[in-house]
Amino acid sequence: MLLAAAAPEAHAADPPSRPSSRFAQACKAEGPGFAYIPGSDTCLRIGGYLWAETYANSYTDYPAANARSYWVSTFGLLTDARTQTEYGTLRTYTDLRIIWRTADLWGPAPANEAQFQPYDIRIEFAGFTFGYLRSFFDFYANANVLGTDPMTIGDETQLPMLGYTLKLPDGFAAQLSLEGAAQRAGGILPAAAGGPRLIDDEGERGETGWPEIVATLGQSGSWGDFKLSGALHQIAQAPVSERIGAATGEWGYALQAGVMFNLPFLAAGDTLYLQAAYADGASSYLGLLDPGQDFSPPDAFQHPDGSLSKVRGWSAVGQLLHNWSPHWNSAVFGGYGRIDIADPLAQATYGTTGIDNLNAGANLTWAPVGPFAVTLQYDYNLYAADAFRPSAEGLKLASREAHEVMLLFAATF
Image (cartoon, rainbow, N blue to C red; front, top):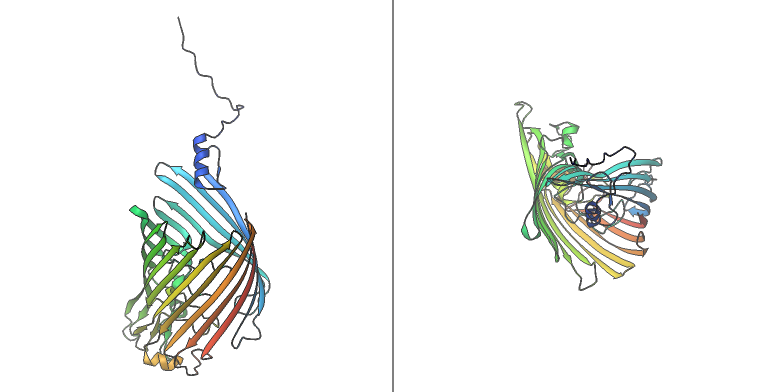
């Protein structure tokens, strides 16, 4: 009688099987640096970067207590894990930074201290994005402007988010997200100096009941990228009247259009960014920068009766990156933005009918070897008030000019 031969049993002492060629090839397809984790369906890449930056800066009427030069050192740890599932790829990504400063940007120099900054922590799965990362609204986001403390107009905001991306044919994609409101809070200022504030300090800073609601439509192709963005922003829950005690939710909005062109006819890797934004009651989306920090644009002004006068504004930015050779490149960038104060009472209180913000700059980068680069960068910023009158509540000067020079040494691994 013939008996079927039984398959040999596996023993604990047996050596583990080698990873399948299918998973090994899949990890290579994810990009350079990805390695297969044996016994799983996961590809993992671990990397990082080191930045050493020195800054020299000054602006009109610069306080003597503020540091005119300082150092910033940054260590960044990157992890990128991609796991294949029956529902698609599950991706977890982190960019964690440890920063050592000898002074704050445009402020008094504190004691030397280390700062931990979770810059990008997210999970991507089946079109959903969860975590803390750059807003879906942003497009240009200071691309190719280097350093920890760029002094440029252009929105780049990291915040908590729950979003969904729908990929469409021909490189199109639509996005919808609910995003953290605290990072977008421009706040509310009283239209009349010394008038009653009908919201407390926390409310003034934008502790709103609703998150930001952001929607975008864009396309990526060999020619470049474009994105149309829109956002709804709840300004505050402001009482209409202390006597009545009723409350109403006031909303603002922002719109933005951005485009990036690839320019291979100039040189491989050359790009041109153009972007414009408009905001009504959502000033933070304009990306304006007040180096003196005396009068940053609010979302609205509030009258003693509780009514709000929203602040409107717009901004436009552009940037050109050119590769002179495989080891040298430079970027030229600039932007202009404006907010209008239409409320007559607020004009009288803050001594201006509006604020103009201008910036321009350029950098030059030398990359002698792939993982190491040296960058010299200059920024100029002008923040000026229209129809200026001295006011204790507004700008101390009719205009404030700021200059910044940065030398950056960067290494990646």
